[in-house]
Image (cartoon, rainbow, N blue to C red; front, side, top):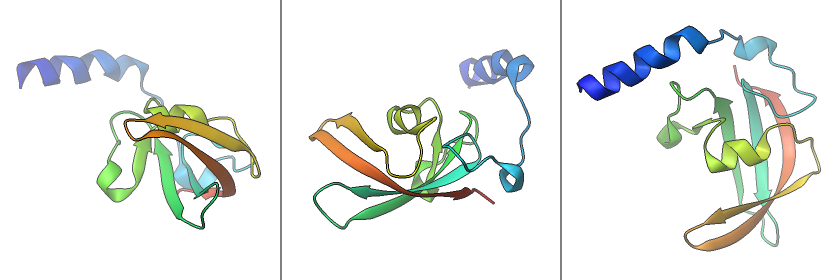
Length: 101
């Protein structure tokens, strides 16, 4: 527990506040909600890109430092990204970018 507290305290000086409602949706950024479609299927997912502290994958909030979040950052609608997972490589097409609010 003490290690976790120390880790959070170390991150506090570098935190930047942002507004999900005011997120720039021209590209994938922290605060945006991204709809992606698996290439070759119609399976879609929606993720809100957050900072590390707000990371909550079970509720579809993914950190900008997570592998999927990192590969999505800066991308635009129509871009295709590839993510490496334990199950292999998967390609996703960015279908929509909206505010995360």
